[in-house]
Length: 382
Image (cartoon, rainbow, N blue to C red; front, side, top):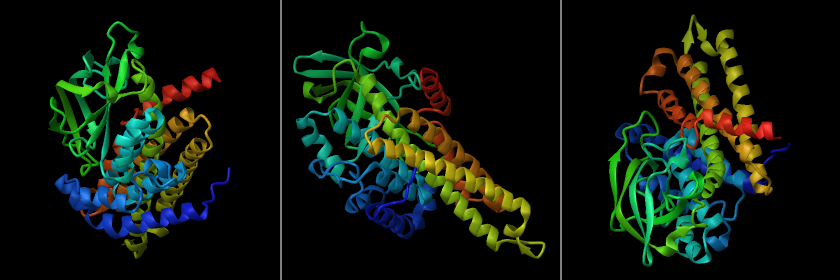
């Protein structure tokens, strides 16, 4: 399969690369150290570049680009700042895309347009303390009361939490229905009475990306904020996550490339025994394995994006891309630290942060174990 980029894709990649290297990279370590989300830099500037709705048609406020262009964007951002990469990925794949796929024209006009234009930031709230990989275990409840739905419960691990204005929230709307058919998806706006924020998580990595708890206490939202068919929120979530996994795979691919580049630069400059360590066979073998893994990951990620653009099923392919790219990111970042030796363990060098950032890609939007279940199930079913 030929993944040579067309002129538009090449221009998007170069534009994002220039922005990432000139504007994101200089403050990435400081923002990580301070656990600070810089909205003006990490989101508003992306909106100015036309990236916050890159995959959506112009009629929906987007740029009308393809999915591969979106992957290239997240990849380039994540090479220098994985927190910015996941901010955009969650915004597009998890918040805006379900509105594009399942929203009514009125919902798209009110909610998707400002998300795609970057006037609002989006978030996706599925996980609960007792419902992680088992999303069907959702306990947050939604009951009707006149012209409103009333939500009660908590969500955890919400990327962009607190900063986002628009949230896609999943709650059990029919207790009598089968486990996976009694959940509905809702659109909840920041500032709605009864909707507040709890704990901000202190994390190992992606520390300039905010992760918060959401609290719903008799939160009343209009009936028109139901997203998709009632009771079919699990289907909405799973379809949304298929695309989201491509975004996380692109993030992981970017982290791996960033760590590889940093290690290569260091190895060419660092001298031991009178010559650069890059000339030693033991180090070259490491780079050979890293380069091989990165290229294999790139092909899997780009293939999943290509299938999405072609309108082909891509659930299995997105799971493969996410699984392999995330595990590659961890292996490559770990080797990058090893190549740096003692310096790799210091915060003065970016590979320390990249290793911490890489680890979460094996966990969120479906753990590696869940990806293997998806792939294995698809293989057995043929």
